[in-house]
Image (cartoon, rainbow, N blue to C red; front, side, top):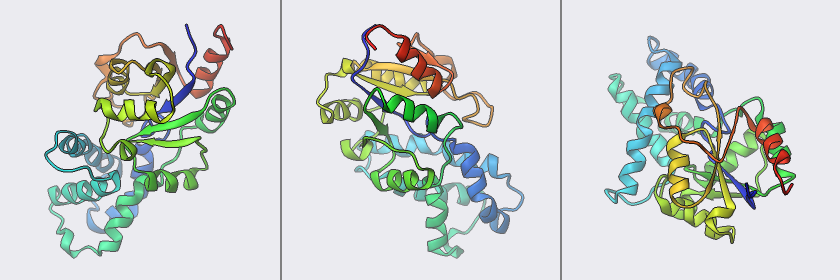
Length: 241
């Protein structure tokens, strides 16, 4: 199989453990306003609002707004669903909680594996995160990328084909020269439909051990690995390296 010229990474779930991190980051806040709600459950409920918020932008129902804003809006929605009067919460505190998505821990294999992959390929993000969010996250968790690309750069969210093809164009590549690395089958399917190569990395704990929403949509991806280190070994073993 021909090797890619560059690797583009989904971030939430693939690179970082959003579920455990959001549970940790919201624990103190919830103890003061929703003490009966489990932070791990709250993290899942908040995440459930994420796809529709992005779809509203993709469909044109509203103009493009960055993910930080969508996190702030969906946080208020999930709080209201629990009966919280968000008007009584300090706006600065709401934004601090919304920015919990900037303080996410990478999976244990990521620092070593990403550095290994970066020695052989340019590594960029192809994420729904906005640039300011990604910069803050990278300063928090110490990860290094060659470029921060994705939704804000394309002014639309995945799985809109424009998000993938704008990233391809920014790198000066043909679609078949860029490989998306992701733990989400729907993301990979959308990338494949645009002509990109695909690499699936398994993250069974992304949803706290519960099945991912797209668990039944697997295909035979170009590359498959248990983690970034194993993916690096697979690339190294391929002809042409």
